[in-house]
Image 1 (cartoon, rainbow, N blue to C red):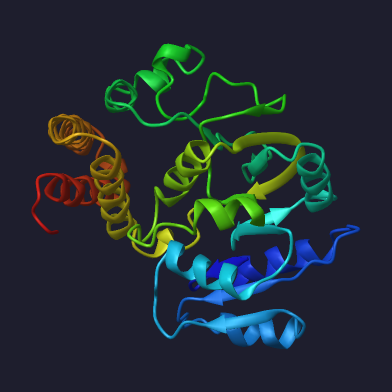
Image 2: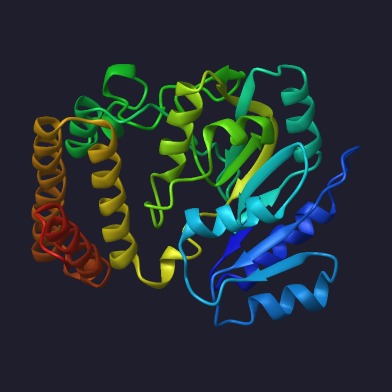
Length: 305
């Protein structure tokens, strides 16, 4: 299952990597195109005529588009893959074998690599106010190997051994269809972002394991769709965080969250302003960050940007 929005080059590369996979399983490929204007759907139909392309006619967001694909697909396993992912050899086969060996695993993810093949932080702790404070104060960046300061991302984890985790990055997920039938589809209230953490949490609550498996690897280039308008996607991410918190936490906790998220963006606005003054040569790159954090701060404060 691949959701695409104006990432033609990445999408074609992703499909090529899937075509090279060797597996005893029959692989069904479904591309759900969110009304791309770059000719993505046409390019797929021309180069990969056996791939099913579903045109939504509008940008429905990540969760809703994936749900369309899940409903239209068959098979024992459902694999959700970002268009900017390139699978490495035997990626799918190894994931399937790992899940076949433990029927209690409902959701699984491979080791994701950055474009330079360094390990990407794809495993997550469930968000807490303490972890968000660590991220706001950049303690997770200053002390990445210290578990208590690691924030939401598991930067202290070596990513060398298979284990159960709280949550996985939605860039590449394999779900057991039997589990999905009980847990339900992705929450379409999330347009983009946080739907993966929400889904993982629901798998846990339903008694299924959420597992990381480093024996299978893929490269996740990241930011393919969001590159077109980073500020807008930053706001969407902020909305997702707020919605997740409303869904699982009390009203007082939600108010504390808004304070923590406000602190996060205020500190980055101050940092950007200082850099803008003292480092003139970096101004071109600083200005967009300032705009983005300003828009996110307005969102946190309840003012629509």
